[in-house]
Amino acid sequence: MLENRKQKIMLVDDNKANLAIGKAILSEHYDVYALPSAEKLFEFLERVTPDLILLDIEMPGMSGYEAINILKNESRYSDIPVIFVTAKSSESAEYDGLTLGAIDYVTKPFAPALLLKRIENHLLIRRQKADLQGFNENLLKMVTDKTRQVYDLHNAVISNMAELVEFRDNSTGQHISRTQEYLRVLIEQLIRDGVYADELLSWDMNVIQLSSQLHDVGKIGISDTILNKPDKLTVEEFEAMKTHAQKGVDALEKMERSAYIRDFLNHAKYFAGAHHEKWDGSGYPNGLSGTDIPLEGRIMAIADVYDALITERPYKKAFSAEKSAQIITDGAGTHFDPAIVASFEIIKDVFASISRKYADADKPHIFLAS
Image (tube, rainbow, N blue to C red; front, side, top):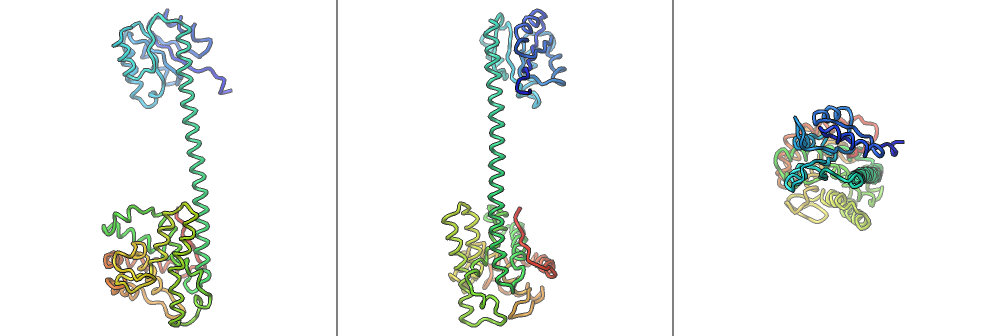
């Protein structure tokens, strides 16, 4: 079995007698390659990877110092432990050897039992290090797999919640899918334009994609008679409809108390609670204005309104892409953040192409962040 295999040691010494003695001492416990020069060592390293190298220093041709310098600077050899076994017994020679990367320094003549014990200890440390690395890699894989499972579960729950909202509000068909795409391309353009780029670059787009799906989650708390009314809402009904923004925030805050995905929920709260605020302060639910409106809400406002304009609703026909874009442009400084509108104007044709893509779709589809 692999666990019972003998470990391999390369013994490098230009003295034949030393090679014979060393091999006799070591062969009972290890597979030993007795090599007469550093040049031979590198020839064998092309075919065999040892568990440890015992290396003499003073050899004709390439010295032990030169050999270890090559070993430690070549990635394929650098992890092989090297013990100098040499007649050079000065402190400076030992210091030089250890500085070059040797794990130990043994002077000749040596006691065979002591050499064996040193080799055993170093190989044990190496094996334990390898076991620990393997354990850490397995642990990392387990954590990664578990994190992915949790992420996929969150993804499924969130998507199902978003689909439930869309199913109940059947007049908006695929609104969530389209607004996700509008949001993505608008954020990308804002970054290219350097508009709010520092904040946007700090966002995790996977989280943004997922959390934006819940911008209308508060509609779960709105009655079906209002959501699916085929005519324009009365003043009282519209006031009730407006409460969906705060209802969404309240629902997400309840989730936040018992969840650790707070970054995701923070984004979701801003999408849900601020996408009906207006730049001039005339929006709802809190009458925020300017940059007091969270950036998520200011971006979603454009995606949300554009989608309402370009699609048919019970109370209106679909506007053309040109008219929808013009209404967004005209709303700069009153309804919408002017800086974001400027970026929207650059990609308004992309918005139009997104809306066309979904025009003939048969059923809602939620885009999941990968």
